[in-house]
Image 1 (spheres, rainbow, N blue to C red):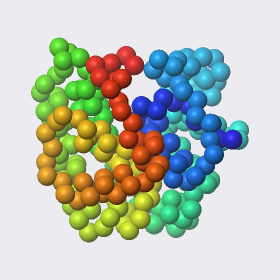
Image 2 (cartoon, one colour; image 1 turned 90 degrees about the vertical axis):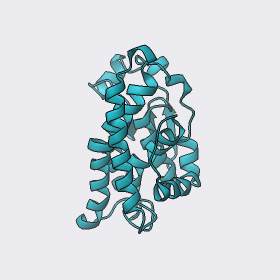
Image 3 (cartoon, rainbow, N blue to C red; image 1 turned 60 degrees about the horizontal axis):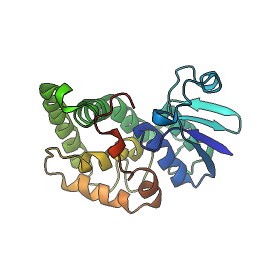
Length: 215
């Protein structure tokens, strides 16, 4: 059986579990990281020398790094909706995945979620938070423009393109922060909220992370 290590409140673990749910894969979830520990054990480090989650073991195939896991699971277990043998079509998902990891995630997850929510008030860098909020507004407006002509990032159906950026939506709309008007992103978010796997693996309260830099 597929095994997935990580804590459910981890953003990167949520990406993986959401796809696992979309693919309908039977799996065992093993809590790791935060208060669960495990990551610094010899057994875990033998599988991932970086000592980070998510980590999967798919019948003996070990994969770490969230986007590498997403691509592996889609290629091994996915339908054409999640993995195309046509490089041109597959690149549509790959572009958005890479953009999310190199642009949106640093601005939102690191700059805003960590900088604002996970940092105690007396340690926050207000100027850095404002800068990253502005970047997030820019990036989400870009998504809003793309989604004005299609229901999902790569077209008319959910693909890997939606997983990384879509995982950020629950936290983005739950935080008490300023947001621009984003009618198309909000409509996309509503579509994602109707999916059982999104409800189960992404829409998870994250109160335990408030002011917790070391969790």
